[in-house]
Image 1 (cartoon, helix red, strand yellow):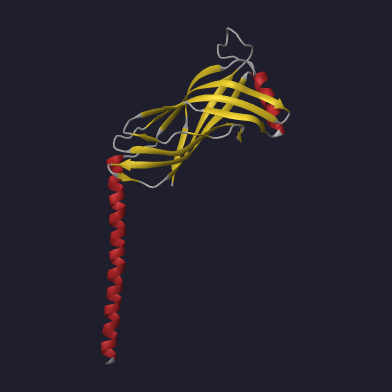
Image 2 (cartoon, one colour; image 1 turned 30 degrees about the horizontal axis):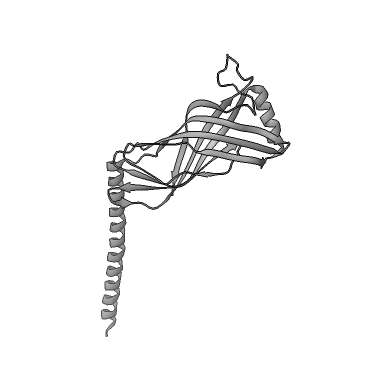
Length: 216
């Protein structure tokens, strides 16, 4: 084999390498283009959650660093997509006060939500003698004196998307719903939502929009 033949073989290998790289780049561009077209057609939008009401059965500091809380919350979820269904998998709901979890997580039932459908859940949230940071007891007393408590109802779990017969992989789902609770002397005519800790159950209408995040 002459040196000229060897040089020709090198050129062939370079051309073949360029063809492979070009093919890979073309495939990547086509895949990205297909994803973009699908996104334009489907316009996927995150589900919308609303905290409709909160019923308080107990919300008391039972010891300097122990908090007992029992709530029932009503959550409404709407799928705004006209071509995409949503599978809610392993959604856990719990209450948080000053970024500290104060109830055990309650598991919502597995749910499929069709196009434009609305789903309503009414889970109970329990926390019996939950240890809390010392400052939270003081903060709760201050909130009681001010007549307003801000809690957060949080939802964590997984969701899947459904388009036709295709079902996506699992996505992380998080929702944060502020719950404003007013209280004072029970029977205060100026404040129909007022209640004392330890009093009978009180239901507070809220219609609070939740912040929803969906990520891979």
